[in-house]
Image 1 (cartoon, rainbow, N blue to C red):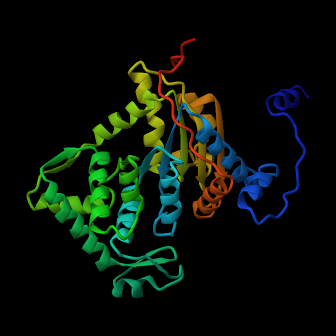
Image 2 (cartoon, rainbow, N blue to C red):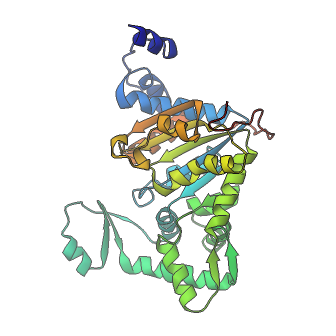
Image 3 (tube, one colour):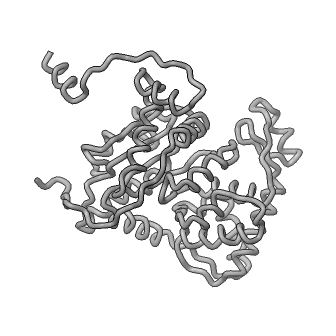
Amino acid sequence: MKAIGEMTKKHPMKTISPVCPSDNVATLLSGMARTGFQGRKLGESVEVWRSMLADPECTIFFGLSGAMIPAGMQRCLVEMVQRHYVDVIVSTGANIFHDSCEHLGIRHYRGHHTADDRELYRKGIDRIYDVFAFEEEFRTVDRGIAAWSESIAPFRGSSREFIRLWGEWLGSERPEYESLTSVCAKEKIPIFIPALADSSIGIGLLIARRRGFDIDIDQIADADEITARVEEARKSGVIYVGGGVPKNFIQQTQVIGSIHEKDLGGHAYAIQYTTDSPQWGGLSGCTFEEAISWGKESATSQQVQVHVDATIALPIVISALIASGAERVKRRRGKKEKIYRQGID
């Protein structure tokens, strides 16, 4: 009984409210936040995201993994950026490559997950579950990235700087189109790709390097630059689509700060949309409670993890934010009020 008492003190018991169907997605998600299971978590994630947007001291970091662009999430992400629902993006290289393809008129197509892959290979078609694309069109973009990178050689800098220049070029080369990459460049929202070589962008840069051009993406500069942004923020919030490298790259900023005697107290807000589970020990399924032990999340953080396919969550959640009139408050700069030291009272 004591354990129940402690639990209810920390989480006061409230009755379940049956959700009412609504033609307003914001109203629907608000109602779902008062229900149970993952529907509740999805609704709560909107509430936590809104809290970040309303906090003038919070810098919001967005981790993007999974094949979100091929699956058709580009416009959701563009709308998110145009409304400044996030401040910094950390992505896989693949998402930015596919995003660039769409900007350049290279499309992804609805296919089927039971297609004969040997036949697809013979026809030069790549499959991403139930999405098809033409391999030769992708290679055209690979070669285009190589040619463009040669035009800015010699280049040495972070992936953030490289992708900013690439986004600006996309916007000027094909102004009739928009992409996550070009809109981020326009809105001055940085994109970091900490595993850039693990993508077709990296393949394009390898082509350029083998031709003798000096192109060097400084991934240590990436770690330094993004950590500095966390160090400079009074509070930080994180939103993860999936997990993988983007999640860890953002999470480790708290550890880097600790090593440099700038313990930051952990992220103040945290949301994750994932299909992974914690019992396998992988980072993508790691709970935010576990992250508290590392100092990556604040012990008092507003946090929610939703076990859901992100292609379901993203359109619904971003639509709910828009429908509810969520807007970003003007951000306030300043030093943190308190410095923490892990393991020291």
